Amino acid sequence: MRTACLATLLTVAAFLPAQTTECRTNGFGSSCGPELTGRNLTAGGQHQITFQITDGLRNAPGIWVFGLNRFNQPIPIYGCDMHISFSLLLPFMSDGSGAARATFTLPGSALGTYYVQAASFTLSPNAVFVSNGLQVECRR
Image 1 (cartoon, helix red, strand yellow):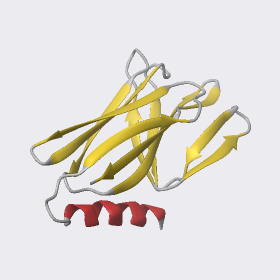
Image 2 (cartoon, helix red, strand yellow):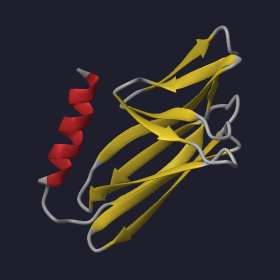
Image 3 (cartoon, helix red, strand yellow):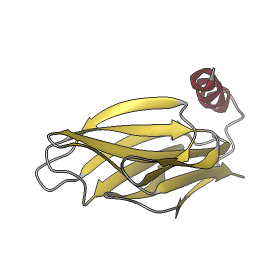
Image 4 (cartoon, helix red, strand yellow):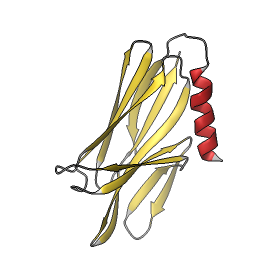
């Protein structure tokens, strides 16, 4: 259901009139490992939104977590907090320095607010490290 809501938001944004919006990213919440940052570059009538984690686990799998709502849910065993709802999950692999980056393209007319967080994992020892949250807001 939540994945459908995010997909609907992005689909509707693709068909809005071609009036360019402004997208901003703002970090919030704490991290128990990687630091998540974001930036937007508007070019050619599209938003290129780049997310990056630094100080994460090296050469480790992880997920980008996208959501439509903010909340604070502790992950008891690991001492980390989830700051957003789960609507869409996309995998990544960090590099040798513990960094990962992903760029997503949105139409220049995209409107709305969504949230992103990143988590990386290790199996030996079994651990989860979660970034701070990031709000992406696109408005006229």
